[in-house]
Structures are given as structure tokens and as C-alpha cells.
Length: 229
Image (tube, rainbow, N blue to C red; front, side, top):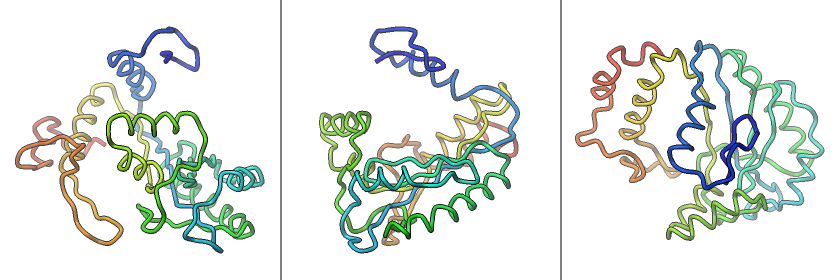
């Protein structure tokens, strides 16, 4: 795998953890003012005539090719299980929300004309976790999960989940590390609900902070708390 900056390969050698960290830090955590957010909205694509079956890749490809330009500027992409994703450009908060709503409104009739709909829920409660996209990176992910003995969980994450993702500016240089530490603590202390309403706490993939208490941890690492975000 090449280490790339601005789409230019600078090294033809195996990617190290340190190099990956530096690449992400330089590319995604550029210090600057907190001015815009980027919204990414995923939803499960459903065949209205056969809701128990996943929509095939050929049909998804044809759908995307026939879509009109979206007024809010979102790109339409596809997740491994055929989930549709709207990825909007970075905008100030109110403008970002308005743009996403316009794009949703434009997409909806195009889906209806194709006999399709979307289910805006976190997990697909009915269909098997099957990858429909042939993209190499998703094939590689599936292979990786199989190699580490987590194929079932990995395919469920890839193919049967949908989420709203909110991308934030890094903010001033002095606060970047503070914000990262705060996010990790909040993630370690999170709880969530499954589609059937059951409450669960303590994702085994998260950090394990004895006794919980995200707020206390944030105050210790970032004395200003969340006021500067």
C-alpha cells in the first residue's frame, strides 16, 4: 500500500502505523477556524416490490447513473450492502442541514420511479448481511474480517448498518489534541439502542475506562469542557 498525500504516491513500501497516523493527522486535522460541518447520511435501499431481498448491483448502478444533479451538491455513493449515502459539501450548520434536505427531496421521487425506497434506521432488521458492491476495498475489508475470525460481525457492520455522520473542523491548533481526547472518552462511555429498543452499554471495541464518567474525564483532559467545540 502506498502512502499518499494529495493523491500523489510518495513511497512504495508497506504502510506503517506511524506513517498512517501522520498522513491522517496532516490530511484530516488541519488547524483552522471552526466554521463548517460536513454531513453524510446513509439509508438502507429497499426494493418496494421485494423488500426482503437486497437490491442488485446492476440496478443500483443504473439508478445512480440516471440521477439528476442534486441541488445541495451532495454526492450519491453506495455502501457495501447497497445502502445509499448522501455526502454533502462542507457548509455552515444551517446551510448544511438545508442542503441535505433539498437533496433528500430531489432523490425521493427518483427512487420511487425506480420502484425503490429507503429505510432510515440504524440496522437492517430483516435481510441477511450480504455485500453487493464489487469495489475492491470492500472485498478487502470482508477478507480482513474473515482472517481475524470476525466475518459475521464485520459483514453486519458493513452491509446492515446505516448512520448519520457529522464531520467537524479541527479548530485551532492548540485545541486539536484536546478535542481528540474528548471524543475518545465520550466514545468509551457511550450507550446505544438496537433497532428493537434494547439498551446496551460498553462496546467491546471502545476504550475501557473504569467507572465510566466521561464528563469527569473530559474536565481533566480539557478543562474548558465542551464549550470550545
